[in-house]
Length: 637
View 1 (tube, rainbow, N blue to C red):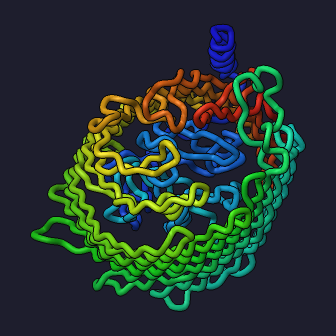
View 2: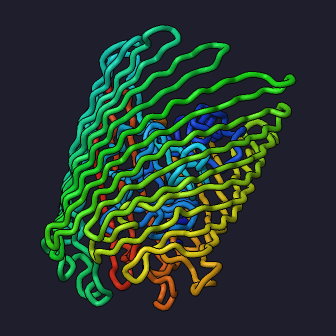
């Protein structure tokens, strides 16, 4: 590994030595001015009592990322693993990470009602404007799932004038991608329509995958005060599932299919229809409304079972925002409600087990942001949610309900422009999902309690000068009734503790070269019961990255990134009785040549052919690809 490290840092040095060859300078780093995720409405970053990171469309371009999880791998507080499907963890929740991070698309909840997690493949990476990541509990605004943090994927909007873009690429392991988008209209009314297709032979035997989809967005400025929006998307996915391997099998051939997985496959269709409006009542505030209907149909076949699943979800989310002044101090009041109805039906043909699961929830929330002085802002919030479940299954029928509340209080002090120190205290929660209640493989039904957490966090984002920005965060979070799977059963565990921190930096060494890096520490462990003192599985204590972004000319951009992930216990090993999964290190590289109408790009991941595993469940290992390359072209008019 030392040789690889030496090569990386030599490359950084060579880039610096060639700085005189660059033709044009780039703008120095500044913190993103406005984000929408932290308060469900546009807010300046330095006024938010939370640790916020933003991945822009430019960052995605420079990184060469081909999916949302890939775009997040360079964030020090985000851990991405893969077991035939990407899992994104914030806060150290391991195998339940996809139920403890709220994932949104344009502010609309994207989490599934079951353990499958978000359908990342249904989000075309080329259609993303930016990704906002807010760390720490955020259940006041987002309710269920927002225990560890929030990821809000903000897509590109239909433009105010006609435009067209297309992207075609190919690469290692038979990867092929085509995307196209067309916008027609003007400032008053516009329509965007896009289509995407992706296919790969896969790194391993029997790991072929295909995804295709269409999407559209409509907006109309009906009056100066009223904006109407609508959207539609439909995504189809087909995947062969190579399964896990033993350590012996990996040594023999890490690309082989699992011993009993040669016939495993799945397909799915996800359809989303949504719409809403924004009405500016001027001095009386602004009214927002959003509604959506989501239908997901899945089919999976494996030697032990054949499974059909249908999930229909209806959402309605009105919101009211009032900006005013109290005693000469600026004040913003946010009040909203979330209503969700989910119908989940699944049937397993091999043994005739079934589940019909209906969940209804209604919540109201309020948040107030008071500017005590020009530099000090106090934020307080509260949410109450009432949820009810109605189960019909092969094991019997159960009705249950839960009333949960969340709250937070945060204080921000703006040291100077683009700089802040903050502290916050929060209470968050997450509900059990359908297949945590009922396990169709074992035909067992468990009535579980929702998990609740209380967290404390302090941090700072500080622009030392125009070139250097430092960000630091420390947190501790206690969780009661955390839900984990062990010994063929889902259980509530009495108490767990998640604590850690992040340190990130961005430094413009010279106008056309920026060094970026970060390090994250997470300690997640049981603090009561028979596993007191044991680590929560699939949570590495250390992870980090170091890289350089270099603009050779105003048109030619490059990025070189080193990534490190530390040791972790295997999924399911709550007793910590097995050896840890080994640490691993990868290096990625990307080049992009951009002109007015045409971009050419080359991306390479794991360029030193690191043979590593990012996910292990009991003794089942999921090997990751060695070096992969992608070359492509974008056109835009």
